Length: 132
Image (cartoon, rainbow, N blue to C red):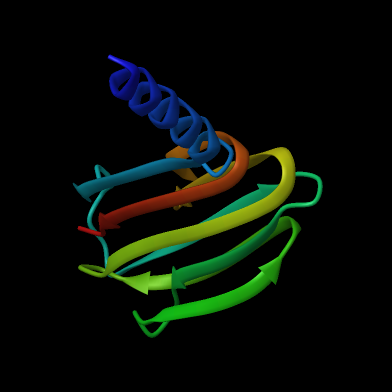
């Protein structure tokens, strides 16, 4: 009986330690988005990283390849023109020593296709879609 109690106590301690490092995650893959088909689209990536957040960002650029940035903080925006049929993705991973808030938005030709807010010490946002 004593061993069961100690085992339970150990599991409780270990699980509470891991709660300190929880990562808040948002991940969504939409497939083709609902916008009129045309040759190219204006895609705007926006992120606002709250106090003390530092982020690594990966986004689809004009050549349809991933561009990576490190150490981004504060408000960030990138505008790109992408061809029809392009697979688009925005991935960010932000960390802070204290809980903070990250806000994310993606627009295609002025239409919001993703808008989300995360809070925590570690924020992981991923959004993928295909242009028609």
